[in-house]
Image 1 (cartoon, rainbow, N blue to C red):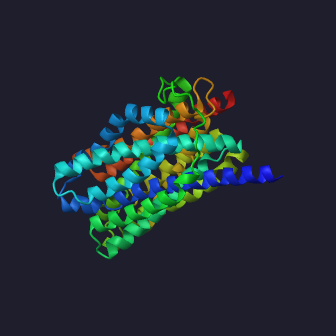
Image 2: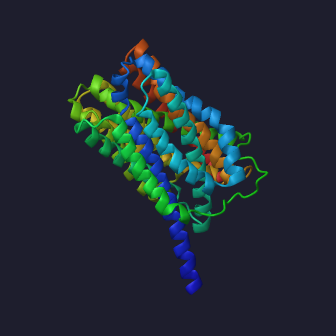
Image 3: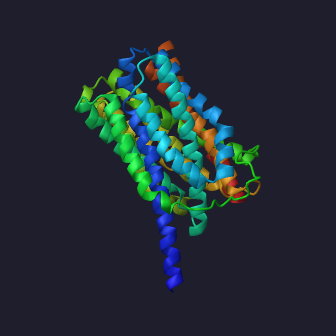
Length: 388
């Protein structure tokens, strides 16, 4: 009985520590996202120029893919997660120091690079911890990421209302993140579920992994748009007062965070296919509501629906990919995460280019179309879940 108690406590400590690092990742990224419109104003960027600057993020991601995969495989997710937990918030602080556009571009490249290292490391940790529990807990980890995003934008709103400079705001977030790393790093899972150092973290995915990746892409391109452009949409299209520019983002993050904490219950009752179909329908409907009726109440309701829609998609496809028969769990999850996260980073710059050529509302319409792809591809996910 004593050994069982120790085992349960050990599992719980690993889960709490990993959850904290998911929180750090969400807090860091959301802090950047909620100050984008301020940085846009500081550097006097139009939508196209902002889109070009934001493109440094996915470039950093793509460059980091083979490097971060190699590092996590050779050194283990624990060491890399601790390193990323320190360096990712540091890159956020450095962005606040940029005084020229070329400096901002370089720093965003580094920010995207470290973001990917963080993502691969923390999801690899989550795979190992989920194996200890013997049941799906991935959604709860991602729920902490979303909750952190909600906290980050809340702190960002306070910083904006206090007219706190971007640098001071980002340094404050960095200090919080570093404190959390120093407290919880020792409780991370010491060894990965996939411990074979000769096994590459990235491998050529089979058709089922590719389909799951496409579903994640459709979801994360919508999330990326909400993160980087929701404040600008409310400012330019909904035309709200300055203190309400984050209202849509807060609405989106609140329902996305809440949805992830209850996702497993609905999957058990309804099945993966139906949950994904409903998710895509809600996300696209919410965006269309905000596009067709760009007023404070209707746009906020629309963003609430978008949050509900995308809340469970990524955790579900990651859980399915972890059951792959052709790839080890960590490798499969990394492959799906990579395809999906490209959507998270490519979406925002794409919005900038399209909105400059047409309008911001038309660019959001394209995202609504992409989010409907979740519903169209859901039947394929249902087949994959039956095969696993």
